[in-house]
Image 1 (cartoon, rainbow, N blue to C red):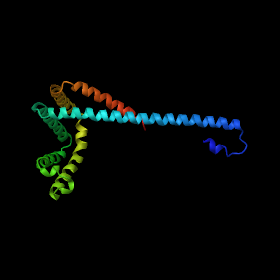
Image 2 (cartoon, rainbow, N blue to C red):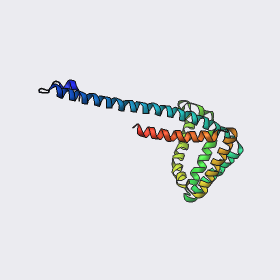
Image 3 (cartoon, one colour):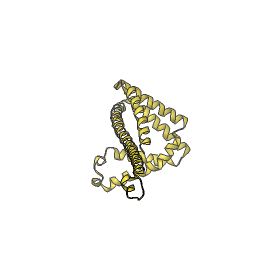
Image 4 (cartoon, rainbow, N blue to C red):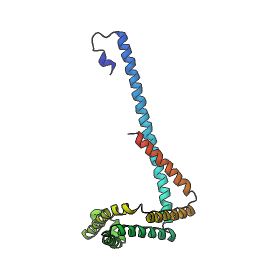
Length: 196
């Protein structure tokens, strides 16, 4: 309620107006503090978000470099094979889809059209890419359903450890970067949940 609106009401004494004015001022101060708190929270959220992006870029660059090494590539291949094996054992119908997906990956991987804007790609390329995306969407739920199997989890853990080991060789600060990333991610989650 604003005081200017209340002054139009007949019969209010000066004391009542003063009390209402004090109440309105207090409410205005409270609203300003809330707005400032939200603005500070959003500013901190932006700051944490920027820091998270920077850390992710550093981690991703080191990880990308680590994945060029044969040891992490082999560990990844082992993990992917375990994942496929588990998927096919539990869902035999997925075998043909996985095989077709691999064919499409081979066909699309070196194609220069992959780097072109979608409007410049040939119809044939676009159809293959759409087929790949459709297969991916069909295969993903199956893969998700087997990702918690003990053999798959163990293989994934070995892959992760191999990559992190190589990352540490390339960038001695890897552990600190990963720890900072975890802290920032937690803070981001806290702020984004609180800012709503």
